[in-house]
Amino acid sequence: MLFRKKIDRYCTYCQFAGKIDDETMVCQFCGIVPSGHRCRRFRYDPLRRIPGRPSVRKPEHDDADFSL
Image (cartoon, rainbow, N blue to C red; front, top):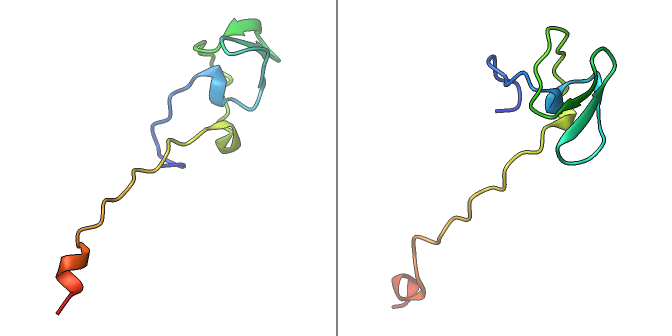
C-alpha cells in the first residue's frame, strides 16, 4: 500500500533526505546518516518509495479447455 498509516520512518522515505549512495543519505537536519536512520522530523515522501514487482499470474486454463 502506498499510503498506509504505519510507515517505516527511515531516511530513505523522507522528503528532507537526499541519497548519496546505496547506504548513505544526507539529511537537512542531521547531516550524513545511514539510510536506516530515524529522526523525529520525518516527513513521508511517497515518490521515494520503490514498489515491489507485481507477481506473475499463471493462466488457469489451457488450450484443451477451449477445444471441442
